[in-house]
Amino acid sequence: MRKKFGGKSRKMTFLGMTALMSAASIVFNGCDSKTDVKEFEKMTLQEHPAVQTAPKIDDDDVESDKRIIYLTFDDGPNQGTENLLKILNKRNVCATAFLVGKHAYGSKRQKDDMELLKNNPLIELANHSFSHAHNKYTDFYKNADAVVRDFDIAKDSLKLYDKIARTPGRNIWRLNNINVTDIKSSTDAANGLRKAGYKVIGWDLEWRPSQKMTLKGSHEAMIRKVDSIFLNDLEKTSRHLVFLTHDQYLRDADSINELDMFIEKLQKSNKFVFRKISQYPKMNDILN
Image (cartoon, rainbow, N blue to C red; front, side):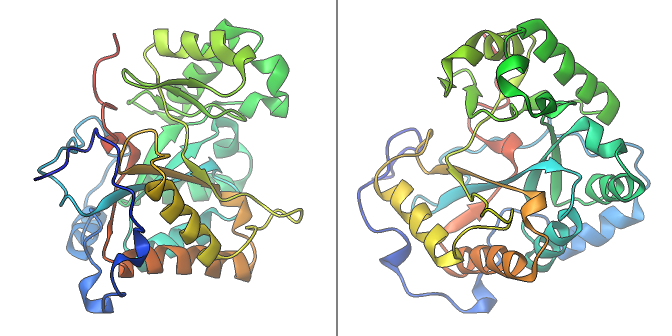
């Protein structure tokens, strides 16, 4: 009997179910093929590809024994953005970049990195505010109208035509079927974004930084956390895991290698499909 994606996943050790598959069998990742990349490079696009047309995921899209992982990276364009793109291109895996508007104009390098992000078909662009709250989160969320204006400025300046957003410094969800606010003083601002038509997405698992602002811990430890989330039914949506880390943590060789190995081993397990965040369940539903 096929189990629906809306139900909670069965309690079983997930990554340990099967031995690692050979490298020749890992290209089931839901991303563009190499041919697609070449065709894309022939096109002359003024805007990033629209995400509204992304197909929805349902029971018939993905085999019942597989799980969906959404790789998301915040605060770009930033230090580490080029390294991130090298990893994604190497592994041919798609991801979503939650952009900070002011970073796109912060320096020549950031402007160049913004162009790299826009022109890469593996990357989907989404809104992470214009100001990133000036890193003063408590004050930022006190004024709900100002929060919406900040996201509108980012949307317009970055030409983001789908209103998928992530709040700076907060793990907030506002979809038709998920309503979560991690810090309650941010509730009015979150509701204001939803009322303005933003689909606010948080995360299920974050790869946090060390004190040196590099990735903390090993890829093996992160894979065990992925396993634990699916085993204990901790995803916001069953069988769908939103993963978060930040561009700026990918500046040193060790961090770059750890993220690369994390993705490679998830691929080789042959148990995961990688998708862009616009394909998350209910993401494209019209907000009530």
